[in-house]
Image 1 (cartoon, rainbow, N blue to C red):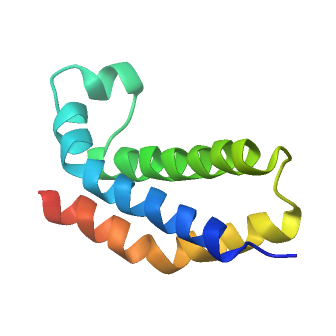
Image 2 (image 1 turned 90 degrees about the horizontal axis):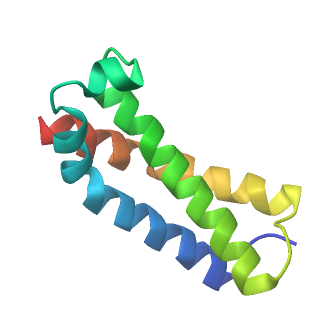
Image 3 (image 1 turned 135 degrees about the vertical axis):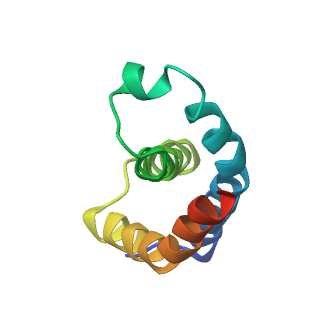
Length: 98
């Protein structure tokens, strides 16, 4: 069984929240010393990874909290598809932050 309508809505909400956090993350990771500390070259690429981690961990945590079990491989695949469909928005928010 795939994600329920509620679960899919939860994923969409997590992605929306992530997009809203991007400007503050971009500002934070552009601060002096961050590149050296975290060892990255491009802040945009690093923040994209932060976004993916935030979304994936948010989904996993909330799914387990709501269902008291881990998502099935089918549900994880559906989550990845939802995320991939919104990836352009995430990337645009990162690169438009400037």
